Image 1 (cartoon, rainbow over the protein chains, first blue to last red):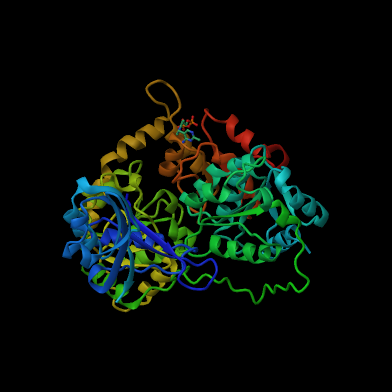
Image 2: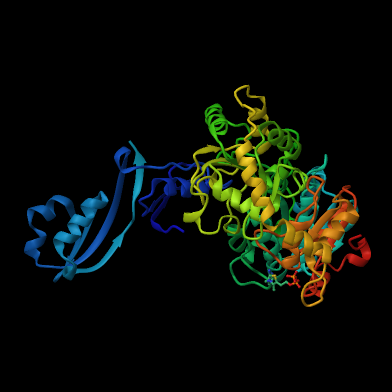
Length: 128
Length: 474
Ligand SMILES: Cc1ncc(C[n+]2csc(CCOP(=O)(O)OP(=O)(O)O)c2C)c(N)n1
């Protein structure tokens, strides 16, 4: 059994009916990953590529609603990695984009207690 | 020209003669067209599940003939299509090529819970090889040809065409042209590689030559690629013992001196002990099902594994391979046989050991079969099957239903003819027999014996209901 961790879908080419998906699994055993990838090959699928973190770019976007002091939103770390989408009284909505690690680091830095809501795309990736 | 006409035209071009099914509102236009054309033999089942198994029976039995046929069933939408589910799932588990054509409600009302609407594509996707829903009459012909191609190439399987009622009646554009001779399916991601690569063959031969205790697994792929006779030459050349999976039985004669019988939970002592002692398993066209392996972490711990399999997704699924050969069994055996590096070794010590395994149950079984009745004074199934085997000289087509008698047929019938045995294996569907069995007569492989125990004699008859019209199993 395996479990899909994240899944993103887009229409990368101007060919009707063709989608590109980036799917991530949590699995330490590379042979199992390879086997699952082979199982995805079906008449419906054009091609499946196995991307590893060293040889591909992995990116995602998160939109985060925070209940936080305005002063903290202005601190250099926050300014460096986020973009403010909107503010209302004590609520700030931010966008943070980049690697999964960067988004996780941002969320850790902010602290769970300040996060009201998160929308996160999951990973999209491309070979280097 | 309209969708329904093109559907039947394409089936004719695919040499389809029989259609198995049951009518209903959403498939009515196709039935009317079929009546008009008058060039199909339609077989009405009493239940769509029976139609699915009849289609399977035709595919399975004709597989090893010079003219393999694809079994096609035809049903209405909603309840008709849903009644096919068990038969489709069964074909998927056993890699049986089959085409199921289901009527669907008109495109204008799809996804509105219209009368007799079910999401057939959604239901069938995980239990079939491929599903289609043509949304224009121009797509119908091409879809039928592509569907038959997908169902019958590589590892076989069931394919579904869910055809909305308005598309059945829709006229094609005036400039519509389709040339079947020029048609090539455009499936860039669908490929299978019949011919083995050089490097794994070299590695396999090295392992085989070096092995002291090798064992061959004869799987369904041996039957499907018609490699039985070749496998026999291969084992006779290399002196390697062979054991069969449920679906591999009858590829080589069951009483061949190098054959150890069926493996796994219901298998022979000698086959299972051989697996435990082997230093090399050569698995031909099989999938290491749990009834074959039991506990995976204790399975064949001493053995390297060569896995020959046309479906790449089976490789490393249950058992880790040492050498993977993603190819057709027949071609692989051919390449191996022709390789001058393959050596013939007597392997006497291995055979001495295997012969002691053979002795373990031999006398007890022999006595039971001779006596033929158990402690409760009732006839023993193994005795009956053994007698049947003697009477038929092991030559007839044997199709069991599901249960104890099925395993007895697997163990105690002395198969002598290629593809002379099949039944519902992976799914184990009770009731598969009669529908399956009746339709084997469409293939010229001689006499048939359908075996069913007491429980469900009624059920298959209800499913197929064609026994009286088309002759029961002989
Ligand atoms: C459709 C379906 N329902 C239930 C089962 C579970 N099942 C497997 S074998 C069996 C009993 C079979 O009895 P019988 O037909 O008398 O054959 P026997 O095992 O005695 O040879 C049952 C109920 C099944 N395999 N398929």
